[in-house]
Image 1 (cartoon, one colour):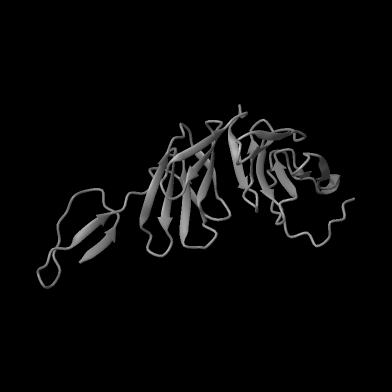
Image 2: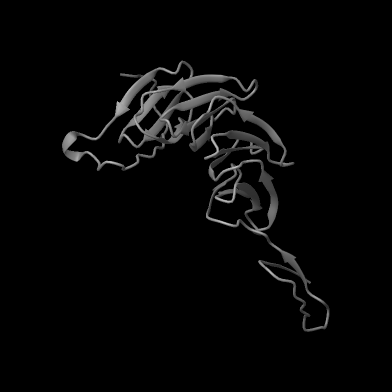
Length: 220
């Protein structure tokens, strides 16, 4: 008999028929954590203040593997659209790409000098983006690792970033109480969303973002 358990010490137990029970030790994170589902819903990827990422079986809760390489808190994680790679951002100012099947580090993207608050994968799997503590939104090409854009316009930390469903746009949210919509291909700022003065959020409030499907390509 095999039982999945979270144990911090060695122990022994026996089933009613006298057969020994094998306890499978499940080692989790050592500090606060968050997670996202894989595109097919079969796995969960978690990040933690303990500097690691962990991949879990969503059906059984079994730990599949641990990703090590960051030197600071892992602040954001994402799956590639096909679930074969995972992306992570950290307050060590790095964005890292990993092989989901082996745990191997594939690439560390260049150009960051501030902590990373959010990472995102484009729907077609060709680009990744990050939102950083200096207010910048960085975009990289997956195939080459080259930095495509450094999008500047926020004042204060950029806290979140996401691609539109068609991958044409990027949306970022920041401590300056604004959301900014960017053209993902050119890096052009298309629009700024900001509460009216009478409805302005208090200082320090963070706007986080999510892009819905755009039914028309018209931009104003």
